[in-house]
Length: 340
Image (cartoon, rainbow, N blue to C red; front, side, top):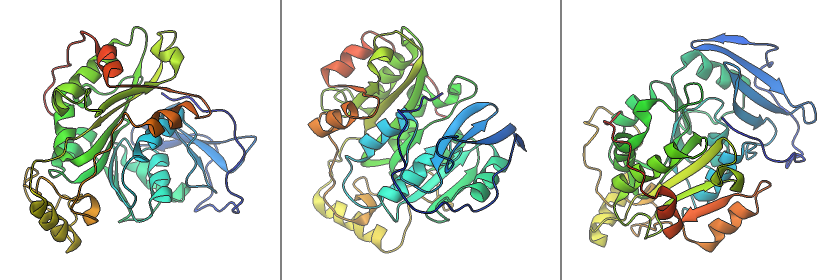
């Protein structure tokens, strides 16, 4: 489901430390097998294969390292968010490479990684130097069920990176999924979707249309909706990964309401944790990100620095935003689905 970028030298000279001996050969897990394969050129780099498919790539000496191109693209979107810790929901945890990167770039972030395979989550805790709970909690659960149980406006970032074979499970695509993701994002929060597709990119176009329906009719025109991929994928030359991004609109609440929500969060409430209240319990529509400030800043995906960051990756990627995102979706109909 992912390609690697060009080979790079290690970005850290830190000594290689392991939390456990890495296994040789496939290891049984709840859903099949997992195997850790070392990079012959850089032994501190490993790729986690789940049922024969490369699912995560990590540098055990460099937590900020991202090897898969779509993760590098996602990181460019996260970099648009205001500085400081984030609350992130990862639907599809595997080896938690992206969660390691977020913690490295934004220390103190609170993250939840969800994966269907309980045994896999136990093993990656043993094998890899992952942030400890509560910085990174790992939950064995269906991704759709975990999303549905999340409270309103409780995350800054939601990442969907779930596959069954070469497809995203049906209950995690379309309008139902997009609406649930919109619900759990804070104002100004970002949904990042790993969408694997083949020419003529029908699924990706319909997913963009689904995001536009859930995130509002002005999502594309106001710079809140985008698609990213390598030029060859966008030109329909081969199968590959696209990253789709959607930003939740800002609220209409007065500043006083935002400051009150921020004060409530600073008092110790963690909205990223489902604590027994109904999942749709109001959080204050304008809760400030991380309680840092009552003034919410919404990232604009039309910012020049985003396009520049994507073009200057080891494998350059093209950003479709604004009119280009609208044109990409074209006449594609949204994938009408129920909430997960």
